[in-house]
Length: 456
Ligand SMILES: Cc1cc2nc3c(=O)[nH]c(=O)nc-3n(C[C@H](O)[C@H](O)[C@H](O)COP(=O)(O)OP(=O)(O)OC[C@H]3O[C@@H](n4cnc5c(N)ncnc54)[C@H](O)[C@@H]3O)c2cc1C
Figure (cartoon, rainbow, N blue to C red):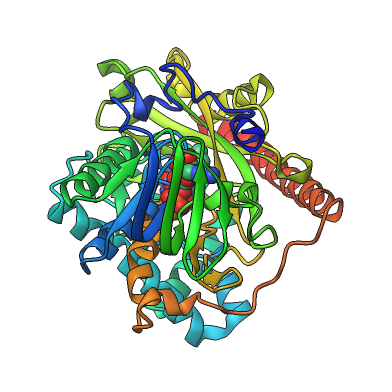
């Protein structure tokens, strides 16, 4: 019980408060586990990883139970910005430098296949989540970034990605918002409603006859050839476990050095009125990411609101969850949004929220098996790009567990750069975010001056 209350620390899981507007209103949760249950595979966590793993395992006629602390979509899967992108690694030039072109080509193929996988699952499970397949633009905010983005787009094409460089003229022809001076379009993917996507997967899980226990935090895994998962109301006994717990995983006492659990925040505006919509342009509603060291993201939703986020990444010493409601962070988000969209000065922000992501040092997902009996499987660490990657790797765990070749092999059991222990971990985080903050502020000041002269 002590463990359970520590897990709940910092979260609003009681009552009816949704963790993001995507999840509002919260549906009725499935019953919590009571008593003992025996299955082939127990899946911990009902986000994209856990739900997709459960579906692919069930398709192989294995008995599966999903145990979720709160409700499906409580984690990042119900809180993200909704960009379905083939982005992988920190960026492709870095990936090619670190691993060579051949391997970078494999990563690109994986990431593009991950997007196609989600698209096919939306059709298979008949999930209506406002999917808008117009791609995502990686955008510059100042001309000094153009040459670098053009080179990145060229490299991406050479590595097999479906990418098009958008010159300043092309950006204006497409009517993209004026703040973004050039960029490249990742043609595969687009934007979606993350809450509807995760709920669609949840419906598919229930329809497949998988046992789903919500409001059922797993407090302990007892190792053995059959693993026992303890919860407040009972236990599950399973031949194998899948961890779909991404940034929450270290709190189970597992895989602490694989990925840094950090918190990022988003906002959603009120719906734009017709005057604001005309002033803004952006008729194609492509997703937008900026090419900052710590990126900004903007998504013009089907409901006519803007969901965005910027720069602020929070990590607390020891990985403890920081407060979800953090006014200084929200103020910075709003300030950045106002600077980027002066044409929307009257548009009010209706919601702010935060959620956890897991970042490995190489920005690549980690897949593997662990535990004394090697029967605990995991996929995690999508570095903020898990809409596609978590779904694909979650599903791919069935192949991996059966030792069949599949997409998980690209990331499985590779030598990883472990995170340093505390206090070095915290100091590294502080040092890197301070450095990135300085670089981004310089760029933003230049962008502000440049836009001033453009308008004059
Ligand atoms: C603010 C934000 C914006 C983002 N934007 C994007 C984006 O635009 N595009 C993109 O591709 N990615 C984005 N991401 C990342 C993406 O959302 C994640 O990579 C993805 O959702 C991870 O899915 P998951 O299932 O692995 O983890 P999660 O969705 O976090 O699910 C983990 C689940 O495990 C449960 N759990 C944890 N511990 C236990 C326990 N002990 N017992 C039982 N259950 C437990 C949690 O309650 C949770 O529901 C964003 C993330 C955030 C936070």
